[in-house]
Structures are given as structure tokens and as C-alpha cells.
Image (cartoon, rainbow, N blue to C red):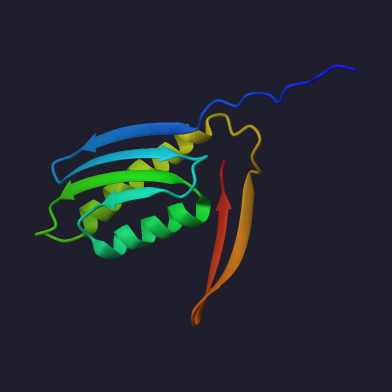
Length: 120
């Protein structure tokens, strides 16, 4: 009888900083986390939605963003999304061991949330 060890998977943790004329974003993402978050964008609703995403997906997410909120919330929202999407792609690497696409329907209070995703 031979003992086999599980194949070690590289940690799916990544960080990035993005500085533009409008924002400064620092983000750390661990795809294999437990749902811990430290989020500060200056937009309480965006903070809430990112926290909910991380908690339900069991991602560890640390995000700090400073931006031109005196103008509007567009640049902060956009740049946080750009950095988060980039880090998810980086952390997934060659996508080995994951399903390419999926979908879900989730009832939330008086609404129904529908999501479909393709991780090409």
C-alpha cells in the first residue's frame, strides 16, 4: 500500500496598487480565505456590497481606496472594480481545478438575484 499526498496547490493570493489622476486603490485578495474583510472606499454602499461578496464567496479581501468623491462616485467604483477583476484573474492563474462557468438564483428579501459567470 502506498500513501499518497494531496497535490499542493499554489496559494491564490494576490495584491495590487493602482494610482490614477482620480483614485488610489490598494487591494489584497485571497481566493481561499474565510470571508474576512477590511474595506474602505468612502462609499458606504460599495463597502457593504464588497463585504457581502467576500463573505458569501469566502474571500479574504482588504481594499483601501481614496478618490475624488467631491466630483462623484464613478471613479472610485470603476477603479475598485478594475483592480478586483484583475486580481481575481491573476489569482485564478491557469484556472486548473475550477469550473469554467456557473449560475445561481438567490432570493434576497423581496427580490430575486440572478447571476451567471464565465471565467474564460
